[in-house]
Length: 328
Image 1 (cartoon, rainbow, N blue to C red):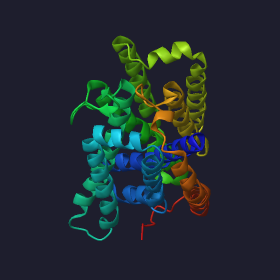
Image 2 (image 1 turned 60 degrees about the horizontal axis):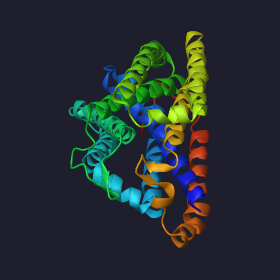
Image 3 (image 1 turned 30 degrees about the vertical axis):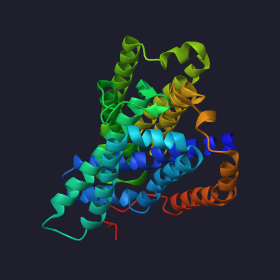
């Protein structure tokens, strides 16, 4: 049961990062665009699926609450403020998504809300990941870092890095879904975003070495971890070639593969801890009776239905969007 629910949690979190990641990235790119026709095309590229993408965030939270309550309680205590800011950003961008098509005079306000909400949500997610990698202050199984224990130079750096990664993923999605100037602009942006992301990775690696972060010791103990950066490097090369030859299919798949490799790196580096390096999976798991009870409902019915819905929605709304199409 424990292994099953860890797997479900990992899949839910990964799907959220991939699906809402490009969604948030397009929101950030939206703020850098001034042409209304291009903005309409960008909104149309995510209109049928953006709401479903955020479902995986809810699923991740529910699974964590039901199956690993100690981790849920600890993370809520540590990340109360960044979680509130992230949710506020997601709510703001959702409201702005609907309202921008209902007004002319105040559209600039909702456009700013859509872009700003996307940026805040992405940045907060990155800071929380950075705080986990750096290590949360845990004493006697409880968070002991105060309201701003999650905030550091490293977590801020990771927040910036995730914004860059999401923006790159968003540009790759625009190539897949759009034509004309939106597609051309995405092709132009990808080399710069890729270079910025590479610089970020180098800086993070140097910082981790300089600060002697505990996670770095795992690379010496587990040399097979180097397989994940190798996969990411191959994906980056294929992405570069496909962008150079203007092939619309591979960029998003390769960008997603880079994220999968990064996710796998963190997951294997932290194993068997759920909160590195304080609370293990076995320590955090709910009683077997609770895990088994949830398995027969959420595990066998709800989770497979969510996967089926996601596959069907992307299947139904496949193909390019028309530049003149609108959300409604």
